[in-house]
Image (cartoon, rainbow, N blue to C red; front, side, top):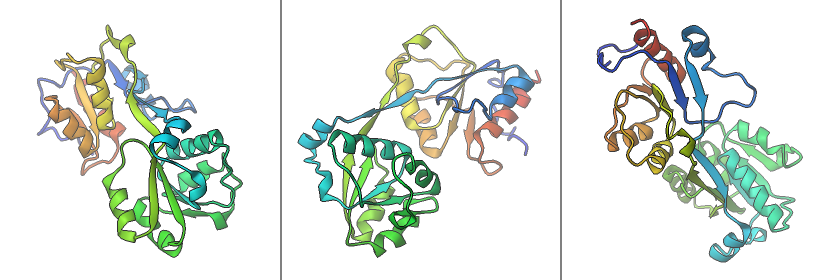
Length: 261
């Protein structure tokens, strides 16, 4: 796969010596970015630009009138949703014994085993998207579904559940907020890597006067790209592309060119 040199800005394609990835490093210590470090002697730091805050149980009782005993099933779309559902259940001293669990994809079902004894008759698993669970949700349409979510909920999820005509309720159990990045005030990187619009928001929440100058920006996803462009920034590397869905592969191809000089 060749990097698209036709759209590459030669004036900005300068040597990359340092990269800041706006996500935490993988817990197992291995990273797909290791090749960049080993092959190009690039310093790579991993600092999450966003973090999750759980909404207190008392707030959910008062503002949402949340009563877990009113539900019989839960729909999970993320690990954060699983963590915060069981956190709230514990704070409310509620045992969700007998609940049915609908997981958007298999990774979530495996993660669920941290909290429950895995019984296939109680766990239903989609392949990837919320639409993949439509058959299961329709089959169990008499259930009263709870959807734990963050303060930001994908409209696709809402539309899908509404079209199914099932009895479902959203509970905003956690919020995504900007991390405190004040320790980066006097630090600069040749490249910043973003995976969501919230990462861009955090950048400007922390550094309202941020100027891009020669800093290269790599983004994953169309919504992240839109957030970059709305701020008047230049996107130097994007993923997915026709040639590759991998962010790290596209960064490597860029570095192959930039660090030749």
